[in-house]
Image 1 (cartoon, rainbow, N blue to C red):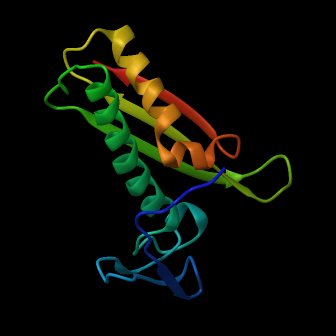
Image 2: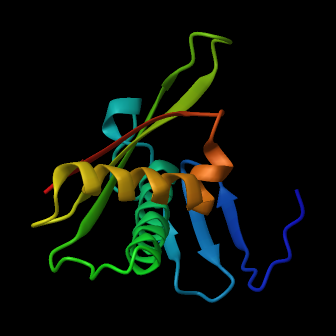
Image 3: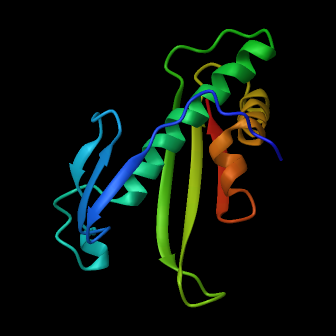
Length: 143
C-alpha cells in the first residue's frame, strides 16, 4: 500500500504515558492524561481511548457524508456517529486489546439503506482501514 499524505501532524506524550501529558504540534490538543477509574486511575484527565474514539467518530462521519454524496442522497439532518472504544485484556496474548463499536444514526432513512451506507463508510474510513483485522468492530445504524 502506498499513501501520499497531504497532511501530517505530530503529538508528543510526556510523563507516564497514560499518566502524563499529551500536546499536539498545533497546540490545540494540550491535556493531562490519567487512567480511567475502571483501570485503577483517578479518571481526572482524558485517556488514549477517549482521544481515539473522538478521532474515529469524526473520521467515520466524514466518510459517511461522502457515501451520501456518492449515492446522490442528501445527508439527513440530525445524522450522528458514535464510536465507543473499549480496552481490556486480550485473551490471545495476555496483553491488552481494543474493541470499537460504531453506530450511525440516520434519521428518516430506510433502515436497509442506512446500514448499507454505514457499511460503505466502514469500508472507506481511514481509521477503519487502519484497525481492520487488528481490533473487533461492530458496525450498526438506526433511523
